[in-house]
Image (tube, helix red, strand yellow):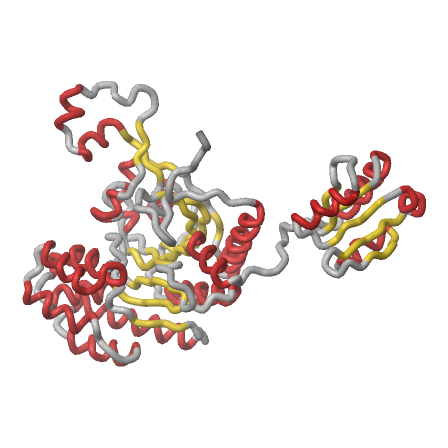
Length: 451
């Protein structure tokens, strides 16, 4: 039977990896520009670390790992039959694959408190796993590129994250819009419609507005126990019109009786003021339907969407005031965003925005007429590699036509052909594979010529 891979996962060939590394290198260089340092955490975490941090929906999407050895030990046949799925999971699984990079990061901060300096600025580029239904732009294994600051509640951090978004997508050539909201505003809305205790139900439902539409969101709100009166009050708030300033003015009236809601309005106004003062030209939209259903967000929340491709969010994040508190270290505020490398990869593919040449591509292939010539090629190739030129020597002694076909297939721009005459003269016959031009040059001139 032909081998296969699990649904929602992908293989990446060398050309595809070169493109992915272009994304990683671009994001990494911008992160470093703002003073962030890299860390890594394990692919798997204890389930006690992961469970309960992503809300009811998120917990269902965690990949659990069976205990090593005889994971059935101590479980009776009756318990297998009678236990609910969560009860059984607790007995046979202690670990899970990480769902995101933020919760493991919070665990890292608590465990390494004595080694890090607050405010702590970190970035992390690693895969995560979600037991989701695979579909366009949604995978079960995908890379996130996260950047976070913890140990400060300054709104300067939110502003820098917006600047990072602008810089990354400017370098990648993708036109985007940043959707901005604040969980305090959402809490204030829940309060003024009379459903203060149902903030989680409201945010989980309205976060699906783009996916399932208003009618189905309202239906879910009913199922979650909201009154018809509260749902009716919610409708006009979710559809406020005008620019960001106009929406904020309307929110000041709507949320006047909510201290929490007014705090969210003030924070949003300040973030928009700071971004304007720092010269940010990014398209920013105050979007009251943006909820980001993860429970740990407490302040500003962001999502970034590509303007020229039908795709979900390609970047998202927000402020979390006490994520470390669940691990015994309360009062540490943080804010961060995550770039979805796999969705960015799909966007760049659809728009054909990759550079025409890759830093990983072979620049010169040495082709030869025999074993003695191949040895000569090896010596010249070593010289080029010392100069930083990506170089290959064709390993087999075979017809030149086969070697040239190999260069064509790999889109190698130059082929250095070596025969007896070239060896004797200490030269190569350098062929430009795009123009077909050939010329005999000294081996010491190869680097200068191809540059």
